[in-house]
Length: 533
Image 1 (cartoon, rainbow, N blue to C red):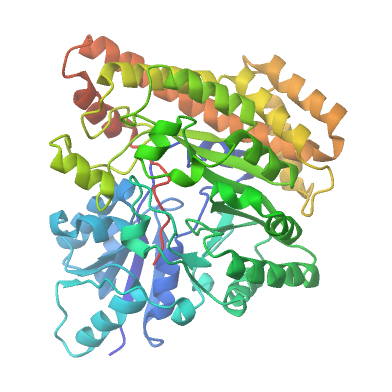
Image 2: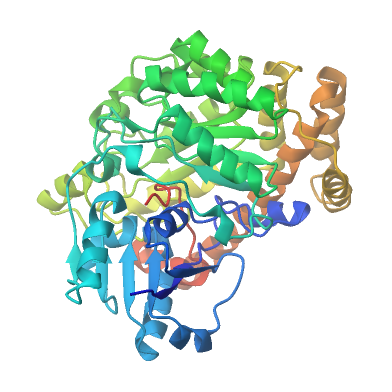
């Protein structure tokens, strides 16, 4: 029986990761469309009518809900507030809800107003739900530990969404990661053996994006793109041929591990394929903290040198950093600042350690009686751990605030940007095309940043770029615009922090009370993991 279904993607709150204030310069509303829901849409019966609403770029009129047979919703943990609002509305209008994604998979037993949970990987559980639904006997929860081959994963339904409001399109090549970091939930969700699509599958997805007219960046959302280096190289060779045949319409970004710097061939292939950014989970320069967290792959490296090597191969390095490990010394905040500034990593996402469900960290802290409450999915704005840290909570929060204030001072940010610009080759495979949109962004940047309180550092950076790397001036403007967002978010964070300090007057209940107050008013997100199907 044909169905009419509405796919709804909950709102992702304002965060460092959202780049909301930067997107305004280029006329965009959100970074990514919802890849998980677009993939699920391709798995539904062909005779079903499917519509999609992304609350990050549009609003939901509740009056349309009764016109649908059911609502499908997928979410990450940080989208909980919006998720709950949607499911409550659906209950009010008596529309059945089918939910999946990382948040329901981790905490489905505590989520109300959902009729059917389709959890874990949709290639396994969705067909079972659809079968039972067809025969009128759908169950409440479908779950499986099976890690399916990705050769059955269909091309996402990019035809049901307008990609114009987005700055980047996410695609997936692999699931799983060979490493087993204590704080990461990827192992429990997707396993330690990376599973990949074939190059032909991935190219078919590139073709689908290309057919929409989209001509900007592709973010490969793998939690570790180089988890299987052999397959990654096969894909990169195919992408290079595709890019040449299509006159390089896309740039690429992804996430990887620091051992990327060991493989010159892999970096060269990424560069030739058009990769201009890679996100690395660096976490901390403190070896003891890396060892206790199980991130031993980073203890064998000269982290600063490896970052430099990757940059010299033409790719910007963005980095994830964490404070709050049990083995962090008192000067960890200074050590982080020193590392971040020396590394030339412009976008350094620093968060307080967070115990996510289905992680070894969560289980350990629970057994030690140190877990305080469930994570809300953000680690950059919550400003209080969801567990009892070894470092005094007040010291941890104060040090974290000072760390953010330091690295996202305009002076320090533009210094890192210039370090990065000076390291990468001028001849990049994919240049930022100077279109009218780019010209408009430049003018807005000159107006908003050229007349800001940090105008001296802004113009100094641009002039030094013109002197050292004139062909990378568009890259410099893009970094400056990203900085605009990062400065704004940091200002908001500091204002909320100072306000809460006055309200709490440094009482013993400061940490949990402040966490609750701040996330209610700001509700910010971290890049815990992507919206995989």
